[in-house]
Image (tube, rainbow, N blue to C red):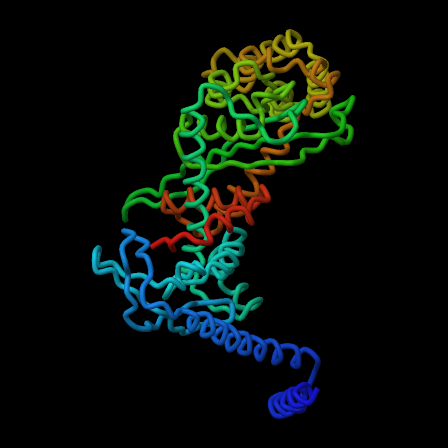
Length: 444
């Protein structure tokens, strides 16, 4: 009891000396936060000191070769923690057989001497995956009092992306070695959706050369609930959930392997109904035919209907005529009358225009090539999602909001890593990746 009274009096004296005459509660909170930050540094230092003094053995097995490693001395190192920079000492052992040294405390706690702690890296990557690195650095300092350069925030974010890339590569290789798809630990999904699309990211080129734009391919696996509308202008109540996002800057074949392996991991091959949504891009449907030949292929309704407006604009100068034609042909498309849609577009083809310059010819070709993916009445009757809002949202959140920031020119490897980290964050996988990353060496 007397000890408690002594602590209370010492605390009161310290507060009165340091926090006298505050002007506002905000000032009190800020000062107290800085004080608690310093106190946390002191407590962490004491905890590390206590743990290091537990190392009393003169000899231990060498983790490198299994022979005997002998105690040499205590060595100092620095850690960059959530409570600031921390200097600590720990025992250092040297093996006379392989001549390699190690510090058991570092191994035990997953420490990274002279680097960020795993917790600082996790928080830095968490803000870095959501906003430009300079802004993330400022936000991190404001929220945690941890000051890191934008370069350090970038390294932390990219480190998480590297972990995800390694996991994806391992999963692809493991699945290729199996004769049969692995059992899915959860219940077999009755209906699983997949979707693919692409965004753009500007990458760096040698000085004086054009800065090339590369396609950032994005995929999603998900389930959906709700029913599609009876009319295209009604509210769409169908919603996606349990979404897994994927992203990479790579050739289509490589992304196909990634999409396939993630789908297998989600139980796509065991689903009672497998539905793939996309636009008319050839690379998408070629990958679907290769990896999921039995899937139901659906061209996104909104993308399909977008081909009609340019035709109407070219065909009619009068706005009322244009709108009547557009409403009629869009209804034909909605109710699956594809021959009528194609005929309506072909009626306004301009023979003197090249195919690439004639929206009517482009639309007619598009509908002919994809007509077996546009049976919208059947899809609606079965309760299928026919809009690709899920993948459009993914493109917006990964490519537009994070990768297309003003002035950004990405190194290709860094672009891949940050996009993958962003996809994992949006998929709710951040804690899982953090656990995998915790005891790995910091990326150089």
